[in-house]
Image (cartoon, rainbow, N blue to C red; front, side, top):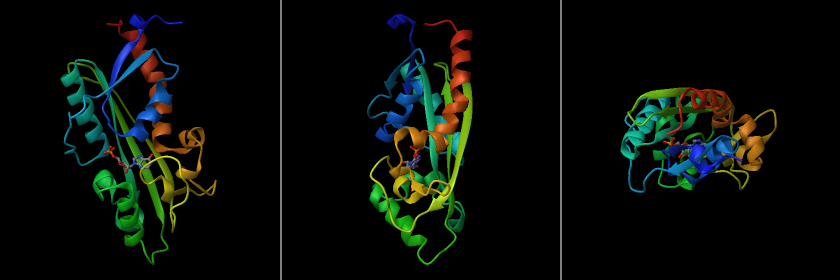
Length: 202
Ligand code: IMP
């Protein structure tokens, strides 16, 4: 059992409950103590890409808190909408329900349902240096009606074709296997482990 002082403190630069629980499962067997970013500390997402936004958030939160910070930026890109909502995924409506309704409305009468989720993750140190950057992608189809109760965001309308299930119909473990963030986590984990062994604990 690791002593508390041997744990590396990392600040998670999100307030999104759905993402927090996915990050908790990433850290479950790593020597990490996770803190959430200070309430009210909002970082403007001014980047044109998921990678840029993840970098902006990780660097700002690391500098603000004095801890290493980890941030993700992610979103849904829909072929028939020329990649929208993309980096505007969280701003495509006032609530998850409104955002889902908007997407389904914009796709009404359209049979081209191809879409993908993309996630970029960045880890930055307290001085604002970028330590790790990874990305993950998950291809799927936009359903005609929402299905499932689990997950968050656009999960009820994003189906993995080979399974015939939306993310909202999957267990957490199944979603992690197929999701953009789950795939990015798989790349991130060995890099984080290496980083911990390269850097002495504070
Ligand atoms: P941000 O990365 O916090 O700027 O926002 C990403 C937005 O994309 C979220 O608020 C969700 O609406 C959507 N999103 C990202 N990842 C997922 C996911 O795994 N499932 C469903 N929606 C997601």
